[in-house]
Length: 148
Image (cartoon, rainbow, N blue to C red; front, side, top):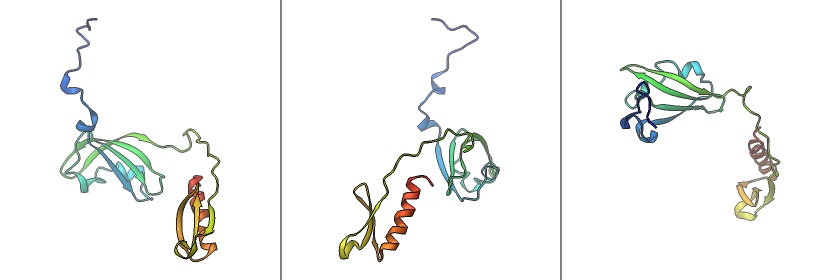
């Protein structure tokens, strides 16, 4: 099937594996960082030597409140302009069902392991001096498992 003249074919040099032509970076930012912060032209000024137009930057804050993807649009000697490709919006995101997760078990593992907690047959953490300390750590671990 012949393409119409007004619809030319994409030349070979414009179609290539993205991993090699578009660099991808990950930025882990402090919890209080906002979308306005990461889109400011000088936010990535410490990394201008590696940034090139078209690159992709995945940004996640320490507390996971900010989760977005950026595209580098232009780079100068002092700044980088980025475009927002995706922003995670908790209010409009599909709800993820929480699985029924079995709670960890606290037990004494002898003089070497001392108090410990086990989940699904695996020792998760050991070396607690008291049962209460192991139970507190197991509770925190369980809350993280359940996404709380």
